[in-house]
Image 1 (cartoon, rainbow, N blue to C red):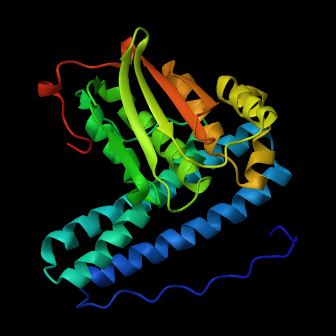
Image 2 (image 1 turned 60 degrees about the vertical axis):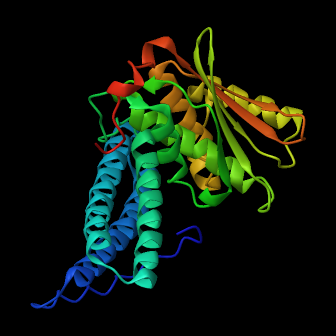
Length: 285
């Protein structure tokens, strides 16, 4: 597509065998998700060159929703298989695919956020910050490098859980990508006057002052950014963080740390904080 070349038609997937098991069903769902991803990219490229902004946004969201639905079905099938399989090697492979599907879901949600859509993952009760942070880490490729620094007190109101998990995952992903693979990324929580401060700290090379200022400007005002340019460069993570943060009145800022790396700080306002932790539920409950 970048070279201006047409994309050839994909061969149709073979129909599932009549006596197929759950693994056959999973393979079918993954094939559908791949087909949907290819279709989304092709249609999006055509839209950006031929239609108005409102139609682009509407179709963008519809494509993202289709991907989310397919990946959600994959995750459900994987969860069922994980309860049925006893072989440790096979179970390890299933966990790996499950983690990959979770990351794909987040990237599909990125497309929906770009279109202004609200997450379909919803919680009715407050969720503990421990569970929120763990869920965010689970959506990151290099999750073994991330360390939670206790204590992690506090709860988050259900309506904000999905978006906070998402924006935290984007910040943690950035921290792992822009720091050496042998270093840790630290996650901290502390109460402050304005609410609850969350810190994502890496031991990377940091960033020049002018780049840090530019990123902080994006985080404070996503409207000033050319989304098309971000899409072309593949750098939509901080835009997604900015859009989600503004939706809930969350302040986000990048700053240098004493180790020469970068520290992302976000402050959850008091209005987002929930009730007593004993009454809170875990994500997915």
